[in-house]
Length: 417
Image 1 (cartoon, rainbow, N blue to C red):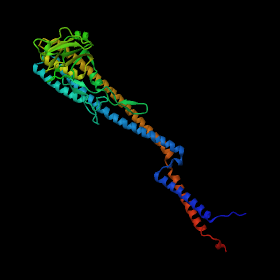
Image 2 (tube, rainbow, N blue to C red; image 1 turned 180 degrees about the vertical axis):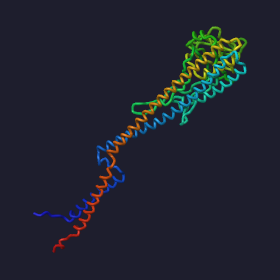
Image 3 (tube, rainbow, N blue to C red; image 1 turned 120 degrees about the horizontal axis):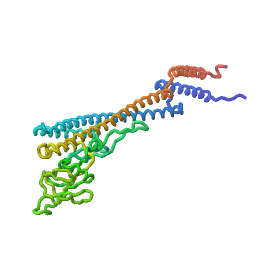
């Protein structure tokens, strides 16, 4: 029994075959134009999955490299600032050595040294408030938009930043610090001996505000015995004394106990106030309730070292009966400056270690990216010689099919009658 073939089937089957051949030809042309063997996941599901994974790995390494670039830029800027800080501290140390030659130093020489110290204090504050390329403060911790070192209305400088340290991810397993807290770099510096810091309560209301000096150590043994206690100088009601006048009382901060002989003391602006082996001066017009704190510590910030050196030059020069106090201040200033340089040098060494690590990680990322791209190329890239040969073959087959169809489609039963 013979099969019956419809006219539709005679025409549709060759057309479908030619469309499939045309599709294969178009796909080969697209592969050649893009240079890619895998155009869709259907072309090679396993290969496409591996290529996607490699692309993700490369993108992640690109992000790590951007992080390293940001890290290096910030660390290089911080390292440059700390280098300038060391230069400034070294210059102050030279001045301290010069000031120690009391036998040959004149009053004019001390005034010149004091004038330069003031300039160096301003320079140091400017360096400590340095910003990075994005306009954030380098040494403010997490509070990048907050100026870290601010001059207090009541005297001295306060740290307004925090102790946070920012980290950047530079690889899957390595994070590196991109900053250092200003408190760690410039404030928490081990002091040569037990020291102290004096500052005003920010809630004070005096007008003009009361200002407390950096002060000086008069009796080191007494200060050692007082440590770690702090003292609070509180201004009392003028009516507490007769006749009514400004007066203050000094209490221990821990329990509020009044220190012996320091209750309702008459206030004379600029007169020394001695407590716990130290002496400070308060000037201005404090109101009742205003407070000034003398805080003992085994640490001393670099600005405090500068200010105490300046205070000794201006208030306890040689020949005024305080030669031993002056000499002790010079000795402590030199040692504290050495501690400052050592602390800054340690921070710079940590920065150098981070930069060395980031360089090694960057090189590793470059090697890993090169290897990933080679693997990706092996899977994804087209063999042009094979593709061109295939294109020629597919083109030839398509043309033959088209010509064959053109010939057979014109045949009719009448051709054989």
